Length: 280
Image 1 (cartoon, helix red, strand yellow):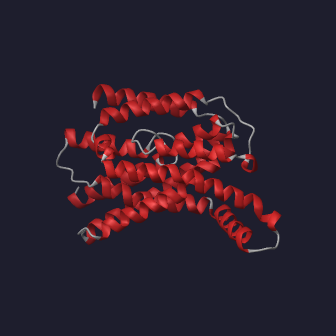
Image 2: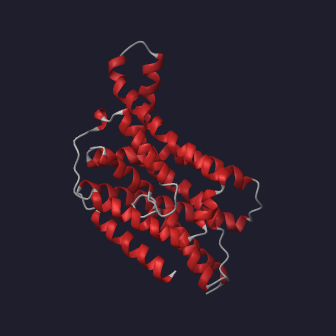
């Protein structure tokens, strides 16, 4: 098998890994860092820029989730601006306007946290410490275990501003590799008594604005780099696969959350966290 074919398989695998782990509560960034650590430890001949790969494949995941929630997003944005600028049908647009405000408020903590962490170089330290990722996977497992039997009573229209702030703070914590973003926000929502499906939908719609900002900043940095056309092809293939698998596994994860089977992910995070701490 030629070197080009091996490299293609590597990037296909990494794109699929991103697509699978982005929507489910197991930390996609944690998985990439663990894989990077394994490669660097056992096979230094593999030359993969994981930072670039994560930035580009995240775009595939973003597009997939946008497609899933396209109708909801259009409705929310349309109602938001109609409520502000139109004097007609205020009551018809209020619920989506109010929901949009809560998404905006919940986005702020992660935005601020990401900027502060980047400026202080905190993420550089965390990303180079795979044992810390293992510990954070155990933390993710604990919180998934704690809410495994929660059902909640609040639906979309009864989410409060306090709920959105706490969910936003949960998303901010998920900047830490090993803490799942979807897991943290769903746990935050369920601790605030949101119904499982309500917490799930809020979590994934909340993913979109912060991911758009991350993608814009990341792609802006990529433009200044010298990347060969052959590498761009590999990145594009990985991104397409990330999008396809994110779409499939987001749909699947929605059913898992609705059925209250988050315990399975808790067990997985415990196993992976222990393996990382003991052997990697």
